[in-house]
Image 1 (cartoon, rainbow, N blue to C red):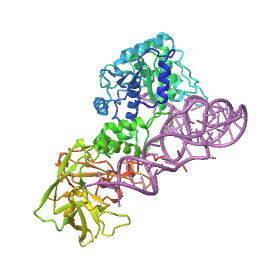
Image 2 (spheres, rainbow, N blue to C red):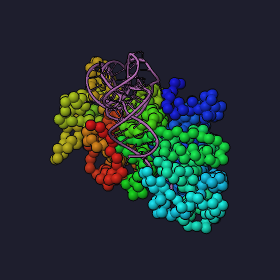
Image 3 (tube, helix red, strand yellow):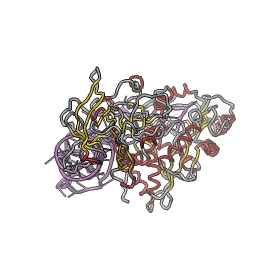
Image 4 (spheres, rainbow, N blue to C red):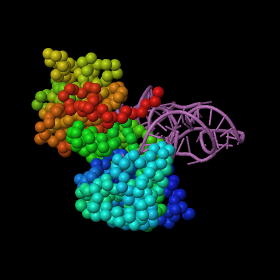
Length: 557
RNA sequence: UGGGAUGUAGCCAAGCGGUAAGGCACCAGACUUUGACUCUGGCAUUCGCAGGUUCGAUCCCUGCCAUCCCAGCCA
């Protein structure tokens, strides 16, 4: 299969070619999430790149929990992360690791650095540290920089033993206090943290910083290409410094790419966590969340998400991908693989006045018009049906070709009917629509060859499932009111007390499981437009949530 | 005013000195038992700007402009 090549692939090929730094070696990548939150679609991009690059070159990709900061991490996330990755379909084989498993080795390497005069224990307090950090053009300083090796060694050992308080001291690399790159101004390698670690328990009270731990973890696992996002470009010199100056078994190469950003959504874990903790949403898997589990609950398929991530490409340009592209990828997949069902979300009764009240017949409707293997389902038809309110118009607008008095329309798979009238209540709301069917058009066919422009969905009043649904507004709405902000529908547990809207659905939908999103395909009648939605739906309070978490899409001009 | 990056259509994105791929979105038309799908056509005389080198520059050089990231004992 012809695959496209991105700039990372070009680097990898150069590295494994004769004379390259990894010639003869197996390409080995890793996906290193910090277990401090749930994975979101941005992580899927990284996953696609990490696992995809390895796969493309017949290599391997490890899964590693980057758990070097005990105060932020939790086992709950470790499990959820694995579940989401599995669901997406990526497989790490038996190569599942924890960064914390290398703590002992990392500590040893730090000691080695001290012995060679490349690290020292600094006793600047956090406040003092900030005051000494210098500025643009002004070098940082540390009165402890030239502390004798023996002294640092002893102090570092005592740090580990828990003889000091948090903030009392740190282990710093001795690099360049005047560097324009602040990451090189003698960065902190170890800090004291008296916290319970989700795996190490109370074993440690000194924890390595990401910048020190990560290159070591990569090297320990024999990673060849350490792929990460753009904000780590500034850290690469430090990454390389650690690799060069510690006794590690391999020399991985860090390559950075632009992380995923999408309009109308927030990708910041911190902000997503706020939405969960402050209960703006039901949880990490709320269907409005861009998390993998949220998308799953919302009805997205693994294939659609992965396909999306593959198609957006990999580059170093900070870009904002349009949400419509993700929706396209879902539609593409669903269109091919999803079973169709007729659903009426805002019912109005349609009475076929010339159809006997005691008669009923069964039609078989294909489950997927483009895929016969998916079979068909029986649907009963009788005198009284539910149709969508939008499919009838008392005053039809131009080019409207569904039901209005005098017009013919096809009831999908059943009959052609002609609208003969309608009733309204005291407020003028349409309560019932009347029509007459043409017995010659059984199955929706037109033996006389006449054209019928409109085809609508319907369900049998006497034989349909009530499905309770909940309409969601988008979490982050479109700043342009006319661009078609769409809701989506979630099927609630039938026992749920949260009945927000009744709907009439065909029998087939009885198989819908709680929280299945049974539609998202933009298939005409299945689409609900928020501008027309009735009041009372759980509309997310934008003004509160968006205050500091909404980043409008960039616009030019 | 320091360091690191990036600028190709509304949005992604190929292109690597030989005269601007592809996808999304959008528009027009055909088809259609979902106004969906599918199909056809349209959509950058121009690659942030200005110079320079060259027979020839989106690709090379110089300068400028714009945007993003960096001063956690976070990752």
